[in-house]
Image 1 (cartoon, rainbow, N blue to C red):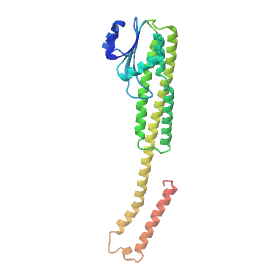
Image 2 (image 1 turned 180 degrees about the vertical axis):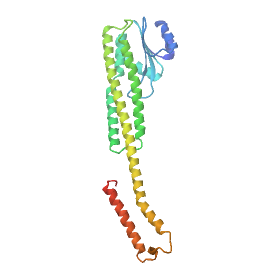
Image 3 (image 1 turned 90 degrees about the vertical axis):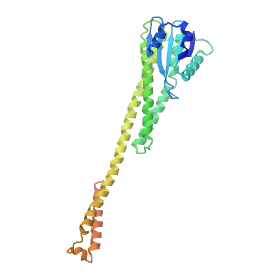
Image 4 (image 1 turned 45 degrees about the vertical axis):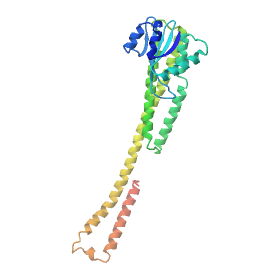
Length: 281
């Protein structure tokens, strides 16, 4: 028998399942994979890689005669029902074969999505390194980090499930299904490695953005410093000749005012030449 039910409707097929299932669920021991004497119990947080959204718990029960999917959320239940109906194609598929094909279907289009995400991150890196980053760059980087974290958790749990299924402690799974699950496990590991490499790329991107901000701040401080240095001697001259002592000859001189103007211009010009010579401008 095959069925897709909501978590709360688990009692509808209670007569078909081992009573130990309800003990596991009641004790919230619904993590990863459990191979008991007469059945296998798989639990994972389903995540729609292509559409995003939140993760929802899916519990899979498999014995010699039955295959049941229990979903916490209606959205997950609709996805699983659609997948099972499509895989059966009008006729009932063998339970173990259906389970393998269901998990294989979870990965459909995942690599294309990861490559598309990698292209976006690389494009963002180019924009940041060229100094063309906009104000929304931190928000985009944070969104990429959150998405990659969700993907990492998603693939890690599936990788653990396939790894533990390979042991087949209760001998429930056939050899051909074990071989196919092993292949899925290797595929999951490749996806996980891809996600980890993208996480490192986003971390480098974040550091590059922070470096660009530091460079911009340094440029701004350099401008302030140059302006301060230019006006400092002019302030000194203004303060010096603003004392208005009686015996200051420059105050009575016909050429005193033009001389101060000329000295100020020459001083500023000399400082500007010095800054350009040092490539500070």
